[in-house]
Length: 212
Image (cartoon, rainbow, N blue to C red):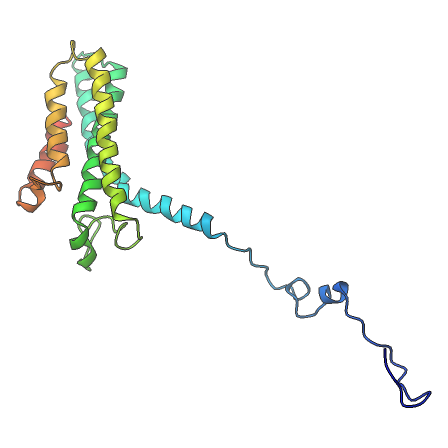
């Protein structure tokens, strides 16, 4: 209430009562000025999306194509020579080659971390995927993913031994050789890439072994 010095001295203008409705009519409010409303960011959702993106970059999926292309070419050549491909075995072979390459890439990202972090002149073909140093993917994720790929490869090998080994026994030593070369491209104790022979070994696996 207002206290007037004497009757009639109070101004006739009514008191302004501020209500929620008046606030909604504030001319500076985005709803009345037409300014775009920003959606509140959800930290958990953004972080999860970045983690998924980082892991996909870590996996270097486009680089799976050379090995798979060589394998599919070998299957196509065999079919053109009159051999009938076994769909189940062909599918397992593609999955096996992909897993060997994934394990190779993951272990390479893990063991080359220090060098990749210092490398400022990287390209698409050297310096790693940059997922760990630049996208902050935790380094242990690469090692866990590598051994998970090896575990999945072992599971496929067990299925192969149960259903296809008797008819296609030569695939086992070829697969073991490819896995051995790929895993120890960067992994201790051999680390072919640090000995100057890594590219030669991997090139042979991509270009010859997968085709055979």
